[in-house]
Length: 115
Image (tube, rainbow, N blue to C red):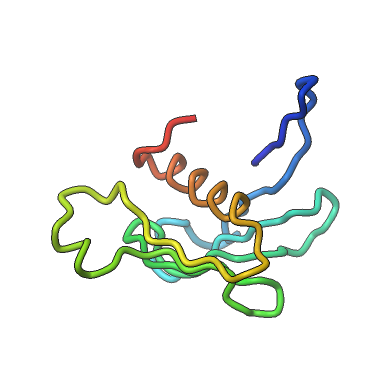
């Protein structure tokens, strides 16, 4: 779960990441669901692809790609670690939300982000 804190320290749920019920997030090509509504049973966004390889997209409920996460081939060949991300965010989409989702996934999978 991702929270926003105001200046008084009150927290508000901003999003929740949900694993598919029948498979593990570590399985290639499984989707991770992202809910931005606390009462909604359906997902607002999905992460599709394989996050650990930095090869995935975030799609909205209509199936439109709102962000693409990857590592450019030129950079991948030079990197010894996968601590760098190449993120393309569709205009009009909240960039902080996308980075928050990526940081949360990075933390869940034990990568470089520490909360």
